Image (tube, rainbow, N blue to C red; front, side, top):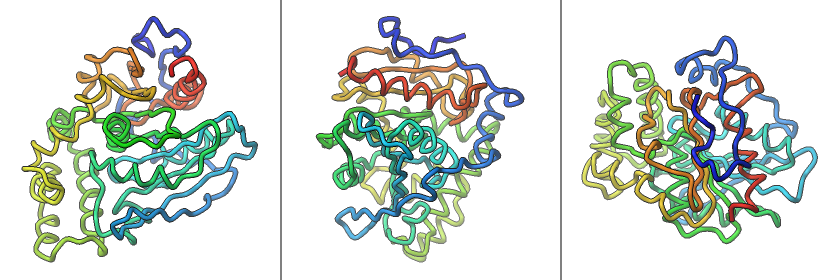
Amino acid sequence: MLPSSSSPGCPALLVDPFRARFPWYGPHLQTIRNPLRPPPVLPGGPGLPLHLPLGDGDVLSARLDLPPQPDTGRPTLLLVHGLGGCETSPYMLAASAHFTAIGCQVVRLSLRGSGPSGASCRGWSHAGRFGDLEAICAQLPAGAAGLVVLGFSLGGNLVLNYAARGKLDPRLVAAISVSAPIDMLAASDLIHRPKNKLYHDYLLRALKAIYLNPHSSLTAVERQGVARARTLFAIDDLFTAPHHGFRGAPDYYRRVSALPWLEALPVPTLLIHAVDDPFISADAYRGLTSKGSLRLALAEGGGHLGFHDRQGLWHLRHAERFLDNLPHLA
């Protein structure tokens, strides 16, 4: 069994090793449980709607969830979803339920073209467009305990790019990623393998929905191209990359991968990942160590954004423990 943290010098960050909850054994059942379980009921209802302009005409939608018993010693959390997600994704709701229950206020963001933001955006997010987080963080409420950005899957890579390369909000005290494709080239190779066709096709449909949003800026010819595309690589190569100044998909993947930037993080940062993630390899994580501002939590199981164990959600408990120990990490 792998330890929950690779840093023996930081025992305060250790939590129990991951043990899957019956009957959700194996990476695939862990991964697909999120959309199958009933969504948590947030004590504050659907959340207060926020409309966050980006300065170029696009406006992002978000929801502010207030805790039933606020704790001024807790930071505000900004949650950032992955590809195909939005503010109402099951893992976003689960994270908000967990952190509002301990007194945090939580903002659930919908990125450009995703969910409710699709109606107010002509552009799209991508794995390295961290300037959007710079603009959003500046507009968020945060108390004396500061601001934490937590990203899931592709949103996790975006959060890590922001933490490592962005102009940080002075209130930012930490960053967290869960199941992030920090090596985008390797992730692209793995998701396109035949064994991952189910996941690939799901994500392909999600990416097409973002690009084919009636409010997006694609031309009619480009829309036809997206509709005909048969792989994620094809869409990234023909549309994502050139629309954002990259020389094709390989150049895009190389330049937006967070991995090369993780050695000199200016704020405490926690990376959570499962060794058995079915379509994001753990190889890139194995080369990292918990030192400086970086903390690594590798679980032996958990799948992709799963981590369903006997006590609930392993990754959220680990994130909570990390935040509780921030004074010792700064």
